[in-house]
Each structure stands twice: as structure tokens, then as C-alpha cells.
Length: 449
Ligand code: HEM
Image 1 (tube, rainbow, N blue to C red):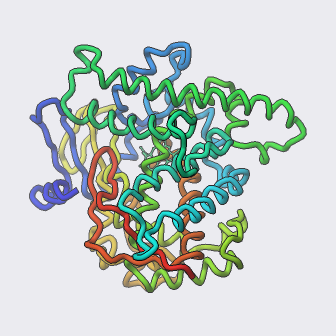
Image 2: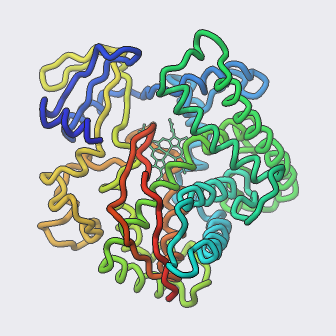
């Protein structure tokens, strides 16, 4: 992120970087107006390059993918056809309704786990807590995508238990992605050990999801009387066809775990370091949850504007995706520069959302700027609409956004209803891999309320 900031400082709002070995030429945009122009020219089928190892895997498993590579790894008409099939089942606001209860249960279990994990004397969460956040996100996304609790939050899981096997596969998958896609690797020349390991992880995840798809098929048969609105996301996907369900579940696992866990972790950190915001958050949580273990309901989620503002502000200050990539489908001209078809352009929203011209006092955590009626001198209304795009833009925007928001809003509401959270360490460090992640241990102090 610092490197991007320096590029902007040194060269201005549009910067071309080329000549880097093994890297494609890329153009960075640091200006919201230029970004808007670029998106407006992206066409009907926006292209975002995929991880090549994943495409390779999908090509090698024709029995699973049948040439249908899902969202994360397909382009053009193939991408469009898949997205058109699944979009309405994932993007409509009411899609989350059948899942609110499950996500509440996951959050409630996680609260109990946090209580047990904290040090009895210091009341701080352990250094390993970041990994527990990943398990929370995995359990949450499985609750939605597989329509079942997997059990990833249990203590002392046997090594051969399904949840532990899944936790390991997901953990290894992210590690191997980094080794194969970012670090120099020879996997394209010959089948490296790491590539085999990665494919093994995909096979495990795919095998587990297949079992749950069969269960969803059974449930769907038994539930002919249910209205479409009551059907879980998985049941709706299975109703399209099982292959679509399988591919979509894999995409959810790839894109919906580390993103959500890091976004929630950074929100918790910002809240722990801003006691005034926390107090307001607590008042809001206490209104919708009369008791500490009251469930977060669908109705409650419509009554927590301050919580939503805190999440928005956390994503502004600590974005998960620093930039959003598009491969140009035709020659375009921006700021007088010709950008030929085939070149990657990255709109660096993570830099723009910290620009004082867009967001006054950008280094301060001010959730109020997102609230209706906020004071003009801080309001986000004055910002250019393309300065802040944490979930991307247009037809290729994040398809899991509603689920990510459901998970984060539920968790924050419950945490703040149960604890006062404090931070007694150096400021949190963040690091960039594919996404921006929290790099310091999330050793938040939890005081019971
Ligand atoms: C805070 C959490 C999350 C953030 C910040 C985030 C952010 C993003 C961004 C920036 C994109 C690229 C959009 C674009 O190109 O315009 C994206 C794509 C995507 N996200 Fe998310 N995401 C999050 C959670 C999730 C979750 C929970 C899921 C799964 C349910 C998910 C599934 C996907 C998929 C499948 C795509 C590819 C969409 C396509 O190419 O059509 N994301 N996400």
C-alpha cells in the first residue's frame, strides 16, 4: 500500500508500471474520476484476471466443472452466463433472510469461544486469535454455502474430523496460492509438489461440499411446500443444477473466508481503539439485543445504522482490496494516454478512500461520516462516489457482499453487546498478499459487561 502511495506521490493520478520480470504491464489509477471513466468503458463482460492455478485445476477436473469455471476464474460470455444464473440468488437483499439464524448461532458460539480463549489474568485474546477469526469466517460461510454447521469452532477437534480436515485444507490453500501465484514458481514448467498439494486441498473441499449438496437435494425434495423466499441459498442453487451449486460453493470458499475474517478483525481493532464510537455502538446493540444472548434477527439488522457505519469506516481505513483490476477489452484513452486492449488497469480505491480531498480527516475513525444528516465537514456525501468501492463495481461486483455484511454485522453487534473491547498494543500492522490482511496478533482485551 505504501508503494502505491509513493507511486501516486511521485507520478500523479495515472501511472504505468512495466518492465518488471514475470509481471504484466499494469496501469494504476489514483483518481476517482478516471476510475469512473475506466469502469464506464469496461463493457458488458468485465474481465478480471484469475488465479492461474485455479483455472488449471478446473481444466483438469472436467467431471466436476464441465467447462464451466464459475465466477472467479471465467471471463466473457462464460462468466456472464454463470453470473446470470446465480446473481439473483445471492445479491437480492432478502437472500440473507433464511441464513440470519445460522449466522447468529455461529456468532453466539464464537462469543463463548472468545470468553474461553482469553487469558484469565490479562483478559486478552491469545496471539493465535487471528486464526480463530478465520475459523469463524469458515464456519459462517459453510453455514451459508453448505446449509449446515460444520463444527469448526469446537475445541480439541480430532485431526481426522471433517471440520479439522476442512480447516487445514483452507489454511493450506491460501498458503499455497501465495507460493504458487506470487512467489517465483516452476509449476507451469512441471508439476511441482506445491501444485499437487494445492489440487489436493481443492479435492478435499470439493468432496466435502458434494456431500452437503446431496443433503440439500434431499431437503429440496421434501420441501415442495416452501416458498422460494424460505429456501436456503444452497437449495436454490441445487434447484438450478448440482454442478452450478458445486462451482459456486467453491468460489464462495475461495473468496469468502479471508476477506470477511480480515475485514471483521480490522473492524474490531478500530472499535477497540475508539472508545467513543464503541460507546455508541454499545447503546445501539443494547437496544436490539435486550439480553447478552438475545439473537440477532433480520429485523434487528435493519436497526443498526451505527454498526453498519463502523464497518464502512473500517473498510475505508483498512480496505481488504486496495485496488480493483480490469483487463481492458478495447483501446481506451484516459487523461490523454492511450491504454491498449489487453492491458490491466487497477483502480486503487484503497488509496482514494484515504485522500483528505475525498474524506476529511482520513486517518481518524469517524463512523458518523456515513450517517444521514452528518456534519458537512466530515460527511462522506461530499466524496466522489468512485473513491470508495470496497466491494468493487458494476456487473462483476462482489457477489458475496450481502453475506459478508450479514456475518460482520452479526458478529460486531454480539461482541459489543457482551464485552468492552480494549487495545493495549502497538498500532495494528497490515500486510498485502492478494488482499490486505491484519499482520499483528489481534490481542484484544475483553471485559465482560
Ligand atoms: C468483507 C468481505 C469482502 C470483501 C471486502 C470483498 C471484496 C470483493 C471485491 C473487491 C471483489 C472484486 C469485485 C470487482 O471486480 O468489481 C470481489 C469479488 C468476489 N467476491 Fe467478494 N468480498 C468479500 C466477501 C465475499 C464473500 C463472503 C463471498 C462469498 C460468499 C465473496 C465472493 C466473491 C466472488 C465469488 C467474487 C467474484 C465475482 C465475479 O467475478 O463475478 N466475497 N469481492
